[in-house]
Image 1 (cartoon, rainbow, N blue to C red):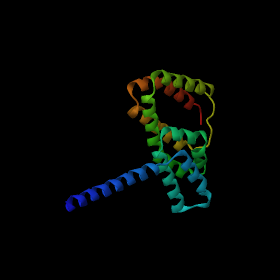
Image 2: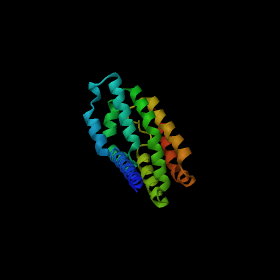
Image 3: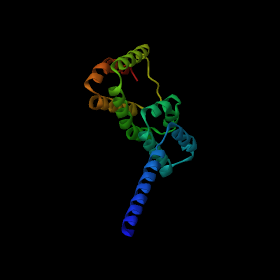
Image 4: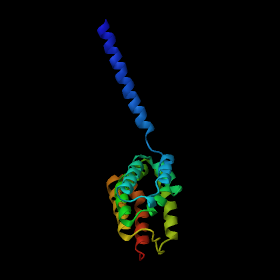
Length: 185
């Protein structure tokens, strides 16, 4: 009987450790609030070399683990934009390489799950907004190589991640983006 009690105690301890690890992993998941605090705490202008790169890599890892809703909150609050502007063009390229694939994949998955009627409403609103700016010079806050990097990754995700129905719904938006991008940079 003593043997079975020891086995049960070992199993209970193993389950408690596993449960604690799972709880810790879930609570360690970044949020828009924790990312904002991290960006505010780490002023890149005071860092250089490996310390600067470590901050950039950690933020990229955090961004890749948040939901699309959290990314949208960060975008609305301009947290990532503010951080991105503090990077050199080379760092911007590296940061984009680390974050764009996951971001575009999330976006395509979101479009694929979206109700077709809502997706078409989204496309129509986006088309109206883009048509307002057709022929305008885009803002020059990013170098051409990084703009091209974003376009390439977006198109790659579009073709590889979007469902056939999503591709059909988004086709007018892609065409309008191409017209807008044909304006001289």
